[in-house]
Length: 492
Image (cartoon, rainbow, N blue to C red; front, side, top):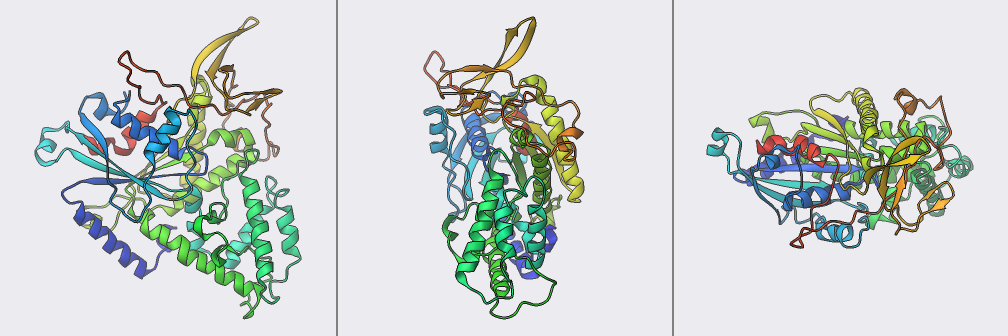
């Protein structure tokens, strides 16, 4: 897929950009780490916790360089890309630590440079290495990444696939208004701005409805319809799929001709620059997914999440180069698929969550024909909002998680106030993984009172302080394992 997204001219520009970047980093080694995921999966929290734990010497027993005491210090530096907004680390940490609120979700691309000074474990490396690595963390919405397959699709392909997706059982009811409106529109009629606007607004409303918690759907291109930014209201975002009859060339001045032109403009001016300027410059990648929310919503949402991960993997450039090829082209050689919010389950279910994500990732890798990079999975919580305990219920002892649910969260008839700490029995994930993905078994969505799993959102934890008044680092689950996979080999 990735090879079909660019022209010869694009590849020449990518090669020049890569060569320039390699030259500037010749004496200052750097690693570009991409962080993506769909909205509310926890990208912002992951980056904030990663940086906070490294700067403050957090407990990272599975991160070998930290465990062995070889990291002298980690600190933030000025990022190398002046045209990319800075990731507002300080604001996000203030929200987590001081306000105990989750920071705002990613709405656009941002970047942060974290520099690590370390001592190599190898005497040979200590002779030739500076013992300094700059990690350029690039944060971008997964919704934008899911636009990249559009570069290889015509407007007719896009329209046909959009209507096929809209007819799936998990989408049919929320897409009804848009499909009904589309059925009344003649693509060969004269182009009229208000018709285009009505169709675009109805299509966008359908995509937004798919994104709500009770649906938890993931494959929702075009991504800028959900996160328009400064493009809101522009012609490049005022288009929609059409019910086309055949593949004949549209009449000049027709609605179909207008929609096709705007669709191509979206690819040219929005999607392609994002791919060329950011995705092709990455060395490592983590894809953060909210498998818990998809599990809550049912097999249809899990199947859609698998589809989204497949689309995401198909857009990367995997592989390992050599000294010569690396001068002109970057390849992603390691990708981590991370299921967040493991702290919403008792640790007894973590292996099942990880097995579910492993199945999802393996099937996505196979469907995307993805080769050349190491792909690993982890069930983690970048910030652990709960602790574990047990409660007696009759003769039974139940494992529970203890935390402060967000205000307005509900279980059965109980609504939480956002202040009271509560013990919750979250339930168990299913032993049979196949049932999680089998849409034929159940096309209904689980509700919040389904006894199989009770999933609510919690406030960030109240951090403890030492006797000297120093605030401890953010607690986590397996953040250290993620760090070891993503950057550990560069600190060996």
